[in-house]
Amino acid sequence: MTSTLIQVGSAEILLDDSTRLATLAKQSGVDVTLKIWEDMGHVWQVFASILPEGQQSIEQAGEFIRQQLG
Image (cartoon, rainbow, N blue to C red; front, side, top):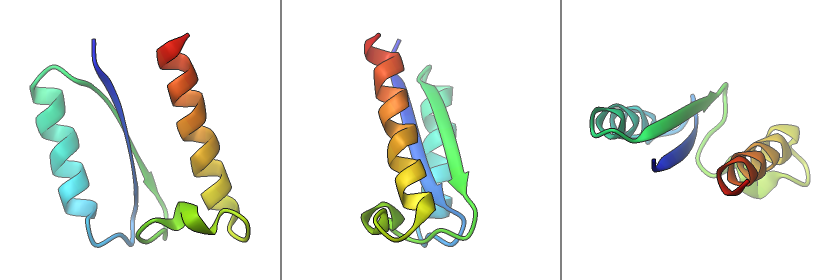
């Protein structure tokens, strides 16, 4: 089964699009994990060197990928 991780910040302009994508994917049979990060904006991961949530998000994505490949 196809699995997808969607990470989005609660302050992201695309939050509604992300939640809609997750809903539609689930309805289509995709195993979706939607993670909404409190107070994060667009591409907060690029600030991982100064923003703990950025590093945590990258680590979460890495763990998700490892689980899918494992």
